[in-house]
Structures are given as structure tokens and as C-alpha cells.
Length: 166
Image 1 (cartoon, one colour):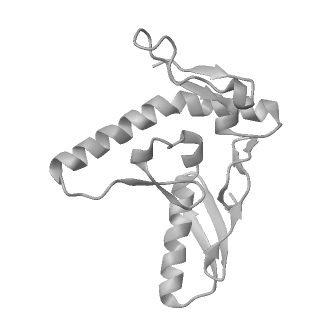
Image 2 (cartoon, helix red, strand yellow):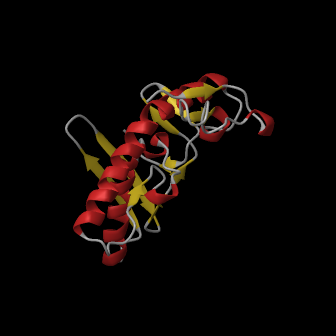
């Protein structure tokens, strides 16, 4: 499904959620909704990445939720891990693909924090070893630190994420 991008920012420039309602619905992604700030290149790049993955991600999450509900009607709402180590209820419709870009790393660090807590450990180094890279995070007081920005490739985005070094 196509998405339109609105490159201006501010309250009066917010997108409508549909274009030509009832005729041709097109999800609209506003730059300031994805990444507020002043670095235009990073903001537009973040919005393009978010818009490109938004339809696919939310379609897949809806299918998963429907499948789980069909198997177990009394199941609790599904949640999804975000890059900042927190989980979000998928039913609120606010799942942004960019906020999940480092969710695997965040899940590993969060799991390590849980194990460290049960073991009574305060200072821990967490390793996430994959097929092509290793990520390292330091837990001080059993709590992972949250960075105000994350790196994807050669780009940095002002999106909160669990602090990992690659």
C-alpha cells in the first residue's frame, strides 16, 4: 500500500490519515510524528523508513493477533518489544517500525537484566552473539542504560534505544 509523506512540521501541517476518504485511502506519515527535531536529512530518512515498513508491520501484527485469538480466544492482548526495552500493546496502533529496529538487542539485554536480577547481580556485561555481529551492553545496578539515539548502518536517529555497542 502506498504512503504519502508530509515534510513540513507543526500543528497546522499534520497529515490527514486518509487521502480522498472512501475513494483511495492512503496512510500518511508526518515527519514530526516519527522523529521530532531539527536535523532534516535524518528526519526525512527516518520517516521514509517508517512509512515503508508501517503497512507491512501492522498487517503482520494484525494477522498474528487474529491467529492467536482464533486459537485462544481468552488470550491477553499481544505486546511487542521496542528498541528502548519496553513493550507496547499492538492494539493501540502506535507501533512504529523505526521504534522496533533494535528490538532484538533490547530483548536480549532485558532478558539478561531479568536473569541478573534473579541472581542478585548488580554489575553485568550482556553479550548478544549472532551470526554476523556481537552486541555488548553494560548493566549497572542490574538496569540497562537507555541511549537517546540509535545507529542503523551509517545513520544515527534520535530514537531511544537500549545502549548497545556493536
